[in-house]
View 1 (cartoon, rainbow, N blue to C red):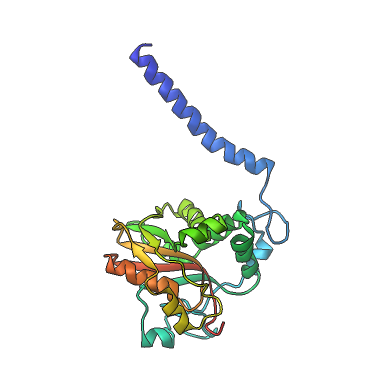
View 2 (cartoon, one colour):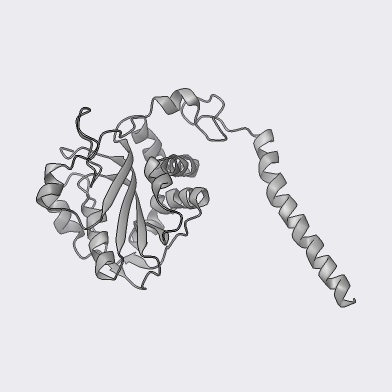
Amino acid sequence: MPRQGVYEKMEMQRLFKSVLRSVIPSAIQRLYPPRCLMCGRPGRDGADLCEHCHQQLPFNQTACAHCALPLPPNTDADAVCGRCQKKPPHYDQAFSAFSYQQPVIWLIHQLKFNGKLVHARLLGELLAECECVASMSVSESICILPVPLFRKRQRRRGFNQTIELARALSKKTGWPMELNRAVRVRETSAQTGLDAKARRKNIRGAFAVVETLAHKHVVLIDDVVTTGSTVNELSRVLKKAGVEKITVLSLARAPLNR
């Protein structure tokens, strides 16, 4: 076949693939329109959540400007909690989309313990709607780093929920994901039920950076932050490895008395 003919065939294949990528998602959406995961009504703006249920979500509107801990409603927007004033965490800033209340607890548990990965898509899209995401400059060298699970625990569960959340966020923002630069090097006991001191001791030395990150601003993704021990320890290791700025972005921030 003449070289010109080869080029024309390659161009036709490229155009065909481009059309498929644009047509198939819209066709699927027409055949199977999104339904609210909470009530079954039609979803809003292509999401698996209706407007009514969206308004019922417990948005974390008043929170510590450093660690995202929920604060009383009348607190100043730039207020910093007593814990951060006494001992600032290793990360530079943190944002949580919601406080740890229903129905967010149900949405997270369906993903984490029942393997409902469709919940990850919705929750990741809700993360992308956070004001802090829009405020981060597109010119910054940003990457997304999901908090890693120990490999045995991930095999038992079959997935890492933070990776699934990060996929949806990456698709919405265009920020690349880094999945293999930081790892959990030892299996820790579950943090649930431990107080803040025990959580810090439990997670100490659990992470390692195996390859330097090219991006200077890392957005750490976690599902639920309680005392912040896990993201703080990972941030300490990342800062030691040369990362300049760390933003923690989580679905929910739980109260410290849990």
